[in-house]
Length: 106
Image: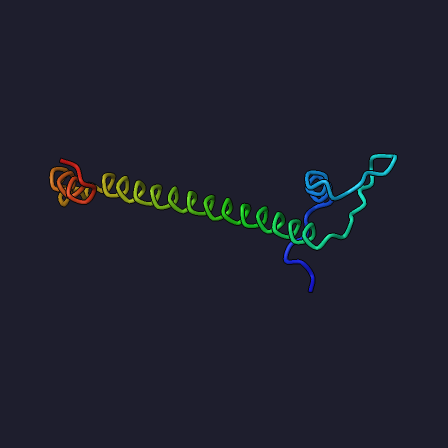
């Protein structure tokens, strides 16, 4: 079965050097693996960790962008209401009390 994620060559070399499971050729450019099953499993796990870390970063970035979009949309709606002079339903005191209630302020 092929691995779920394959490390880029640079990271594979670094991981194998850290594990001490490889030898470097005389040129220093080529890394030869000892084909140890534990090393293979470790490499796969390292690859999955990098993959999952990047997935989490992407999700956090998407969440931040979504939050910014929602805030911008809300601001735009308020500006639009203000420009159209539709502010009679605005009640800052009620909104402040609701905010305190929802977010535990005193």
